[in-house]
View (cartoon, rainbow, N blue to C red):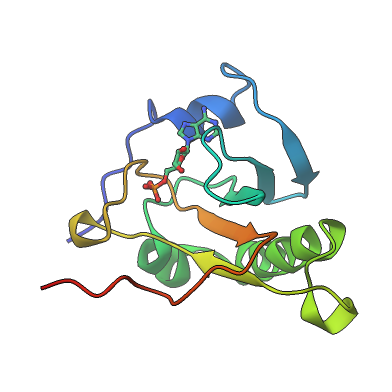
Amino acid sequence: MPYAYDPQNVFARILRGEIPCKTVLETEHSLAFHDIAAQAPVHVLVIPRGPYVNHDHFALDASADEIVDFTRAVAKVCAALGVSPGEGGAGYRLIANSGPDSHQEVPHLHVHVLAGRALGRMLTPVG
Ligand code: AMP
């Protein structure tokens, strides 16, 4: 089933300049900005400029140029924030919530870059 993209989602509005954001990085196909409700000392969102609902939509439908740009934008953000392990940083966690079980709230692909403290185990066990 093809993905239906909602052009009124909050990140589409940020991309159109209708809502402000605290920009970290801009590239041809990607934008990175600080999360409005940071859950770690570093909490940045990286989004593609194209209308992709989630990671699998993007991975299957985006052009190679968009995918390379986006993947490298995430790495550039980590380097700019000083958290890349390859450059002496203490590391980071990437999260890309996709679909209802993941609790995705904004239906435009975004990668959360979380860093700045020890982040603990990946998931809190339930049940
Ligand atoms: P998710 O639950 O993975 O869809 O995450 C959506 C994220 O978008 C949350 O961490 C929100 O705090 C963040 N968010 C929502 N609106 C804005 C906004 N206007 N500017 C920056 N971040 C936002």
